[in-house]
Image (spheres, rainbow, N blue to C red):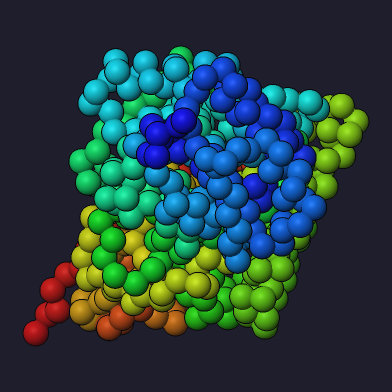
Length: 489
């Protein structure tokens, strides 16, 4: 008879089995027949009661549990199912993941060899069956291996993660409110609590990649939404300091409302003053963009992101249907990026709006977090070990002037292109061209004496075309400084 408290509790959500759930449970049944002692905790949504659930029960025995919960998200199911686990060690996996022969013995050997580990992730071997699943597996495995082999603590991979039950319960387990991003939040909680995670590359599972854009869209939207909710929730969460903040979180769409009408007015002025057909068409495109955003607010921005996701998915599907691997890979990466951004957009609306700080003086480098309310700053990138962020064609920085002359200096990455700025505007007044000095790798904007109080410095440019990139940035920024003279009395 198995012990009342088994060594291993295997926790499997059934919601996302991709049609191979019975194969997964059949493999676990084979491990049991080989003499392994464990319990299966199968967590299923209420909607699976009946014939669908019965197809899974033939592979379990009296020591296992199939539990039904009102939630249908796999992270909810995982968190709920773990509460019923009795094992000394918990093993989180998925119903489209196959255990290999000798998996539990390999994990026991890793535990004996690394007594300092409180948890670890196993090696995941992809199962692919079409071009899209191949591209999907390549992308995910690149990120997974980077985290598991190189990152000091981001080692929670919920398709094959083992942890002491005591450690899991001590930090509160998976927080399903963050969707699939809960995996990373859980890793941060363990790090802050002083627990040690490892990577057991001799313990292997086989992960089935569906190669289905609809499934990928659902997962990625959920991940981005959970990430945004995590960064915008109430309270001071120490785990936030362990993650970079996505730029859209600090420049949320609802914060653009005050800027869109100004950008529209300035883009219209640029259109009127355009000297070439190309400049005129680009300015007209900007006018349309900001007119729609100003008239329809976040609804239009949400629609714009939805269309970006759908168009990237369509292009990816068409490329893979024709067997064109290089274009399919390019569009797949584009699809994943815009899909995550759409998810973050949705998550921001569920978070907490914060107040914008208007500094009087500041020295800011791009390696630091982008302050809340700064609009138009991209992700941190590197070129020849020089950090930079692409500055968007239109953007804004809050500042506070005391009535003296205020200078804002933009420092650009050497050797990278920069677009000619069309205008700068501060406090509702255009900055005169003579007050804008472009000197090598820096641009100095002088806001004249008399402008005082809280305001935004806004800018617009025609942007540049980057190879293989839909963005039209003004330039590659390395730092920004705000300084001002004392008011003469």
